[in-house]
Every structure is written in C-alpha cells, then in structure tokens.
Image 1: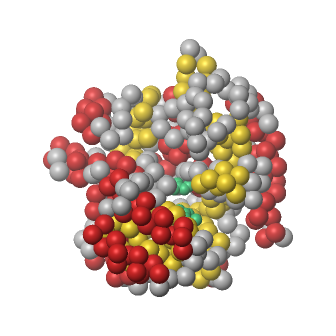
Image 2: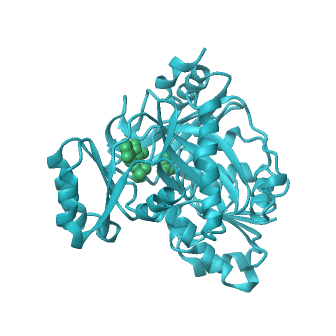
Image 3: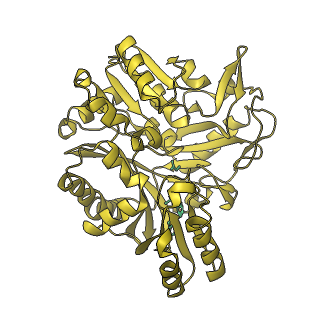
Length: 430
Ligand code: AMP
Ligand code: GLY
C-alpha cells in the first residue's frame, strides 16, 4: 500500500524508517518531512494542517494509509475532515478524531474525563477569566509547590510549577489576565503537585481493543541533572527499569483499561496512539497528562524496539483488528540522545552544515533526523532539536556508551547535547 506520514520531526523520521522496512509498503510520502525522510521516502511540501492539500496528495498518489505524527492536525480535526467524505471510507488514518484529540487539546476536558472514570490523577480546579478573584481565593487555600496549567495547546510551555505563592499568583495573572498563552489560557487549571518519577506509557487503540507499546523515560530539561529550561525532550530510554511487572499491571488496570472503556462510553472512536504521561509515586501511577500522539524523542527509542511489521500493526489498528495482533518486541535497551542547535530552547541558528552522520550509523545505531533539511546537496540544521541518535544494546550502560561514542562522530557549529542521558537509570541495572 501507499502511505503518507504527516509531520517533520524525529518522530516522523522514525515512523518512516520503520514503515519503509515493511514488505507491505509500496510508495512512502512525508508531508513535509526533513532531510532524513527525504533519503528513504518522497517529501511533499505540504503543511500538516493544510487538509485540502493533504487530500489532493492522497488523490494524486493513491494513498491508502495516513499516519498523523503531531497533535496540531488532530486537534484541528484532520480525521473528521476525511471521515466526513465518503470517497475516503477505505482510507486508514492513524490518529483520533477531534473529540478524542481533546484529551490533549484541553486539559480541562482530560481532567474531567479522568475524574469521571476514576483514573488516578492530581486534584485540580478550573477557572476562567471572569472567575479570576475566585481563582485567587482558591489558590490561597493551597500549598506550594503548586501547578498552573493553561487549558489549551501552548507548545509545551503552558505548565508552570510555582514553588511559592507569589510565583503562583503571578502565573495565574499571566495566564488569565495578561493572556500570555492567548486563547489557550482562556481557562486555567490549578493543580496539586505530584511527587515521584515520571515516565511515558504508549498505547495503540483501534477504538475497541488496544496494544501496549514499550514504555520510555524522557529527559525534558536542557541542562544536565535536569536543570534549566524545559525542552521538547533531550533524550529517551526504553524499557524503563523502575516501571516493570506490578507497576505496569497497575498502569494497565487503573489507567489504560478505564481510559479505553471511558472513550467507548463517550462514543469516541479512538483509532490511534495514546501517550500517557505518568508519575510513579511509590509504586502507584498518577496521570500527569494525555497526549494523542507518540512522544518525541520517545518514539526514537520505542519504535526501534518493535520487531513486528509496522504497516501490519497500523492496518490492524485501522481495521479494528488489534485483538488479532500479537506484537513482537526486542528485549534490548534503547538509549536515544538528542542533539540540538546551540541556544535552544531559546533562539538558535539555522542553516549550519552537519557532518559525520553516516559515520555514526551501524548495525546497533540509527541517526534520526528532526530539524534538518537538504540544501545544495548538504544536510543542514533547520530547527532546535536537530538529530536523535539511538543505540540498542543488552544493557542500559552498553546502549548509552554506544550512543555517546557515535554522537562524537557528528558535528556542526554550536551543536549541544546532554551527557547524562540514562545515568539516573544505571542504579537499577543488575
Ligand atoms: P504537561 O504539559 O502537562 O506535560 O506538563 C509538563 C511537565 O510539567 C510534565 O512533564 C511534568 O514534569 C510537569 N507536571 C505537570 N503536571 C504536574 C503535576 N501535577 N505535578 C508535578 N509535575 C507536573
Ligand atoms: N517528549 C514529550 C512529548 O513528546 O510531548
């Protein structure tokens, strides 16, 4: 079949890399893609939210399956767009519809959903701008640290963890009154702070059945030892040694099953990925957030651990046959380290030539592109997060050593990466 991947980051290069390995994949397209996808598929200069242009590409290239990478087109209704047109009845789309995507698009929606279906999460209250005084009064009854969240999509910046009441009041004013996150901050959640260690759990749902994918740990801060500004993610490790056995069973029983049942009860036909950000507090899972897509850079650690054919897995999800699918996983550990442009997540340069990518790749190591493009036959930087290097090995230590030895072969002006990815997990290895 012919397949279109929507998006341009490391997540989308990883999907494309894995889909390209399938015997079931004929022609592969990416909209808009990057220099990495260009070397294994055809890039189409189309924005992920330009649904008319995507439809035209589907018609022209006789696309049978669309894999939606980022949340933006899902929240804007790409699935509804195609499901409302009879001629696309047979098109498989991996991603939830607009209502399902509200699990990520509105933190108020997802909090109400979790409360309705008894899914463990932090206690929170929602306020709008007309309730500013009420919100302030409520805030004063709370203890710090406290978390303030803009309701809508805010490019990963809408969550403020306030360590004292002055900071919390300032954040409340910035969101509700100063409109720092514009309409995403029409409502604010004042949420209890959760203690523990974070991890990401991934599920693929066909609307009735689900498959759990490998879990991963993300490293969000720019600086080593989790310091400095938040980023999209600086590295990932899968599997996560502190989240096995009894803990994962609790996640499935207390979080995943009630979530899938709840979606069914709400009449939401959820065919796509569900990414659950969790806090492990002394062996008990609490949901921090839902995302309606795979994580980036978690995908770069999770997908290489899937041995099954990804086209067949997606076909099963699209045709409501995940109950017939038995997923095969690689037991090895994947360690992914993201290299970024100097200055990221604040301002950074684009257009610097990258050297050494092919020297970094071998049987155990893959280089996934994120913010890259081809310019005059050369691969150059084109974003904040530029590349993700993933190695698979028998232990966390070996995978980490392999990844870092390969990163050294890559360079460009002001390249930066964290040198401590996976270090916190070494204590769990035997
Ligand atoms: P979100 O955009 O909801 O993923 O939040 C971004 C990050 O803020 C999460 O990955 C957590 O590290 C942190 N966070 C969000 N909510 C809470 C909470 N209730 N308690 C502690 N940390 C939180
Ligand atoms: N790495 C976190 C995310 O994709 O949201």
